[in-house]
Amino acid sequence: MDDVTDATLIRRARTGDRGAFGELYDRHVRPVYWQAYAVLGNASAAEDATQETFVTAWRRLGAISTAGSALPWLLVTARYVALNARRGTVRRERRTTELPDEIVAADDVPAIVEAADVRAEIDRAVAGLADTDRALYELCLEDGLTYAEAAERLGLTHASVRNRLSRLRARLRSDLRALRETA
Image (cartoon, rainbow, N blue to C red; front, side, top):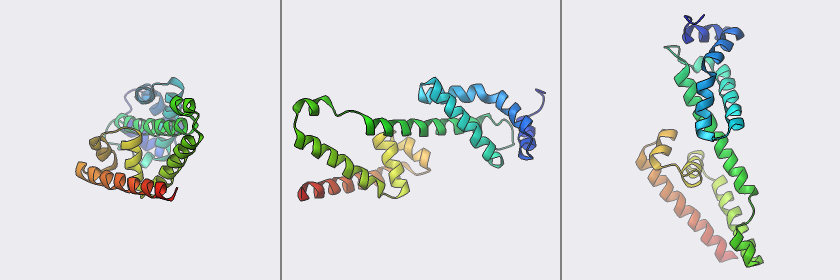
């Protein structure tokens, strides 16, 4: 059945043909896995991202272009699923990591408490941001993406990202200054 196109398989899957979707899966699972692995660098996490990519494909069959191969759509989806998984892992690790050695070694309880207060205040300020600003904070300031990468990801211009991040940094500095003045 190799002469059946992806477009045909997708049309059949849209009518509930799980076999057609299974064939689409068999056809593209390896490149989707390797796309996820390239982002995550972990086999188990890449398998999870691959599974999530195909679950998303099943749910969004109507969004997949039938003008040829489904592979480009699947690869882009796999990349975003993997990036989201990596971002979630980074956040969990940041929340659960031990205190830096210099703080622990200093045995300075007030400094430890102040560092925790500052982190909590940053988290509160970020939680109160608009969705786009919060996404920019996560992409540029936490994940280290460039302005151009964040602009492309969010459908913004480079100048818009630069200006929003400038305002965002000023707001966070102001919020932290206010915290220090009340402490």
